[in-house]
Image 1: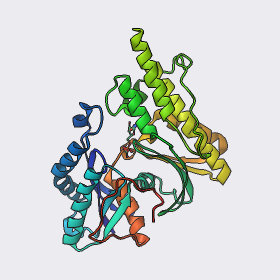
Image 2: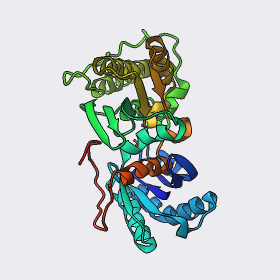
Image 3: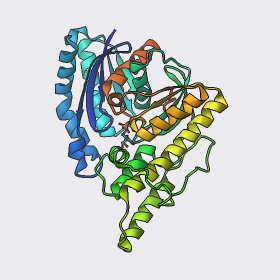
Length: 335
Ligand code: KG4
């Protein structure tokens, strides 16, 4: 079944054509350069750019897949969570397309689709498995009990991991999106130089808290600038990265051990982080666990992952009517 899928939850306009777990085309038009001058995504600009780009990106996805619109058998779209104005552009475009083609409309949860990015490249990956979901807006440890069934074990009590990277990087004067730059320039010369906290949330066993670390970095930078002291930015980057990875890795491994999972997947933009990948790889090898993460091109927002998750949503009867609305926040295990 050929599914045309649409992603517009943040600053990437993406349209793909997929068939099961196979990607026939995946076009991504990124707005990063435009938001960079503001140091972060400006929601209204994002919506306007989606509106301008979506038709063209859709035509390109159809052309690259070597098909016509009449070959499309369903339309999948990210409807939640995300920037509301940005989501609405994709949702309305998808509704019009599904209606005009007379095919089913499939609502896809953004985090579920990040997990599905793993299905594209790991044919052996099937639920149940444990997933660490780390993106710019969300940080969650979930049991993937089936393709459309999830159990949340823990999540962030405040900022997401990506947000912590982006905001601390911005304070260090690094370019948006800061997480990417921070990871690139981090130099592990002396990780004791800056006494940043090893945060642990006081909440649930597998919950995270990143705001204390973020505040510690902001205070450290302000104090240094008041005293006219230089900061070793690459070392500070490495220290922040280590603290965030410590928290993510220890919670994931503890959850795997407690609930008996030997298959672990990582998903979301932060799954591109080099330290997170390398350290989790080592820890999983030691324990004999299988570790899955997407290749870099499927870590960030893209429509191919929406199409693959859409395939399973449709199979499980998750079809929307023309009253489908976008939702800014929605847990992954919504019903
Ligand atoms: O999943 P994503 O593309 O968008 C959301 O759905 O949120 O994630 C974007 C986030 C940003 O915070 C970005 O800084 C972070 O992923 N990110 C990274 C890396 N690559 C992207 N964070 C740390 N290290 C990276 N290599």
